[in-house]
Amino acid sequence: MNGELRCAAVLFDLDGVLVDSGSTVERSWRDWARRQGLAEEEVLRVCHGRTSAATIAAVAPHLDARAEAERLEALQATDTASLRVCPGAAAVLSALPASSWAVVTSGSRQLATSRLRGVGLPVPGVLVTADDVRHGKPDPEGYLAAAARLGLDPSRCVVVEDARPGVLAARAAGCRVVGIEGPSLGSVAEVDVVVANLAGLAVAAVGGLIRLMVRQVSDV
Image 1 (spheres, rainbow, N blue to C red):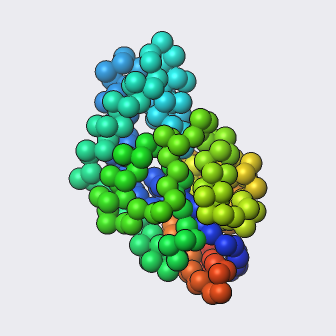
Image 2 (cartoon, rainbow, N blue to C red):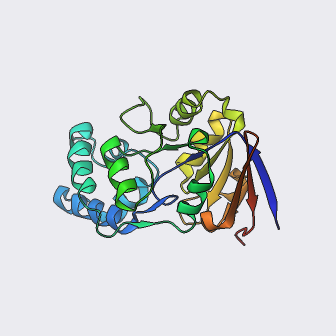
């Protein structure tokens, strides 16, 4: 099945969409869980798509979540050796005008810029991080802020997400959603289309309109 979504801007999640940081994320959370005497698998089950502070508050409410998150993400920002650019990400970003895309991530600004630069992707003019919002995903604040900074109504934006909290945030903001196939995505009924990765999208910018042409729909 082929299809097309038309929009004025594309709002990207970072990890799992633009940057493959899976091994880095898992390694750091496992190390943190062991230091805290927590079950590693339980921490990994809840960490995807949420801010580090929200994850820590959920699994270790006795800790200072914000302080712990700052220490954890500072360490993650220096761990770039195993980062990889996600398939199709560089081509999609290069096809988009600079004023028509943004990144909305649950990580800190330091972590986001470190990961983008670590894989050679540009840092966008509109980058909304955990430092910029009061409420992380699944709250829509981040996507609403990105649309506002681009001067657009959220309904004119398409979000690309790989985790259910981000999908819920995008939907609550009034955006359409392209889902990246994977175990964290959740129900495919909550997205407009699912692709294996950004290589499944062809992008054309014509007269201020972005056309996202789906050429590789996931069989999920």
